[in-house]
Length: 247
Ligand SMILES: C[S@@+](CC[C@H](N)C(=O)[O-])C[C@H]1O[C@@H](n2cnc3c(N)ncnc32)[C@H](O)[C@@H]1O
Image (cartoon, rainbow, N blue to C red; front, top):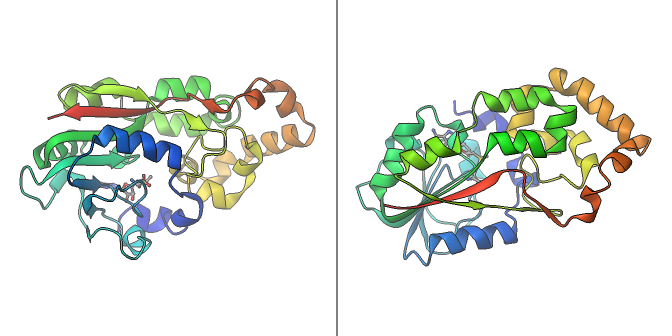
């Protein structure tokens, strides 16, 4: 069974594509005539010219919207596709789940005629700049240390890549790890945590003391005093990066 057959049951509830992040991804695809989405999940961020989604979890595939691009159940490491199958291939918030990163990236490059676009995060920046993992849930950061993909390694596997910061809006609609950086109460909601693999995989027992401390700091408004500077920001850079490579 694929990991997201357990993690992904409520993905569609909290992980709605954010239009501002979509605009960045679509600009990076640079008017590709056709696009393949690898690690596609429920289909977030697929542009209209998407011709195929590749995704190993049936639970995720079942949440794809009616009318979205055709999808195949497969892994990045062995794409059931010919070389040069599409102008562009994208892989969004997925490479950290792959069992063989080098094989998966080699497959992206084989299948793309022109461009590969990968959305991931820089774990060092994330750890240092995201208050939740730095100050309340260091165990979640430690879990991410075990799976986060070093940006430089990824860029090297891509044969060189432009690295573009992706700022997270304060009202981001895609509930990934740092999406709620200015809405701290959200992290107390189990439905929100279920949509964030870093938290779901770290486990509720391990997170409990940090979440209790957060609840207490929110109730006493200690959180608001401590992070007053954040409340004045509309976007934040906590390490999300778009890697854009020409093949
Ligand atoms: C956080 S979700 C991201 C989904 C989608 N790209 C998005 O941006 O919403 C990660 C996805 O990667 C998929 N995945 C895990 N291992 C994979 C692999 N080896 N090859 C391709 N996809 C994989 C999971 O099943 C899951 O749907």
